[in-house]
Image 1 (cartoon, helix red, strand yellow):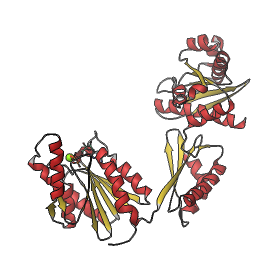
Image 2: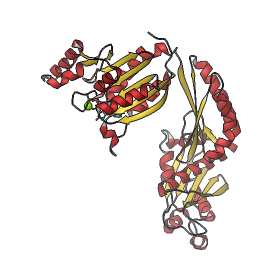
Image 3: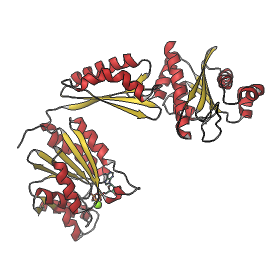
Image 4: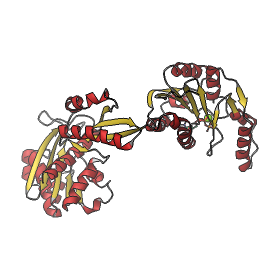
Length: 422
Ligand code: ATP
Ligand code: MG
């Protein structure tokens, strides 16, 4: 048996339904996470239809470029389940009936007071030399095949069968040959800066780590209204990995401050909630174009009743006047989407709620309603803390839902930054 440490993997999701608009492969995400845990990187993913010849070709091609090939699906008893045949074909291994597997399948049917259909015998066919992976949640056993330096792993499609099987198989068949190395991760979440801006500042800091030994890999991701820096490193020792990640994270935070709002997995709403709670402040919200999204996000956090006092959605001019005391003359003079109206919304709701902190949001979410001066995406956010107020204009782009989300994000970030100063 070879002792070469497997470093790369390819995943093949087998099933023609995943080549339609109706089904998506999610098994590979789980498989990837477990492989990463033991220091194996996924270098390739493929979705293949239920075609024996095609699948054999794909497996053959992938075997040349990855240490581990994981296939999921197509282990069932019907004619369109071709995974074991395709793998046996490409590896040149004969299929042999495993008597213990026949028994296992027969017993599962017996338990349901059914006779085993003849076609289910197919599921007891095993390529010569393959190790069986037991399936307590189904009839299809998984298979682990060593071929030279490489591993080929066959897993059933249903996630509740695949997950426990793969977990166990990784610890039994893979962990011993990975030298105990695991991947450790850290995510820096950043708001209020563009992806290119973040990368320009961050690349000189994280860049050199990629070629160091041991290295840290950094991925930059733009996710709705924010940027994420994903740091990952592989090590046998937790403390070493955490120290290394901590060092890079601290340098990045210093360079990007105060745009990094979390490096411990917390969401922006959690961070803002924590800052409010720590100061004993409560917050009130007056929302127009976000339609209550800000209130919804802040109250997604367990325990938010300690600091969220109220939120009002004042969509019409009448509501802004009746519920927040925004003067009709101000609405007529400046328009509902304006700096003074945002400020009047924030102070209006703060006075009525009696809170330390308040937010007012008014803007044009589109797609209609824009003008040259105030195009779609124009949003004014006002924050009032005690007697003071700050108002900012934002010019967002994108569809309606995205503009609403970005407005809620910007409002929370204004509150966060101001609270950090206090
Ligand atoms: P079975 O014995 O149940 O037929 P199988 O190994 O043949 O198992 P498939 O028939 O390919 O598996 O898939 C069974 C079900 O598992 C699918 O209907 C789908 O719901 C789910 N499934 C299959 N592949 C995936 C995947 N890559 N990601 C998520 N779910 C999947
Ligand atoms: Mg099937």
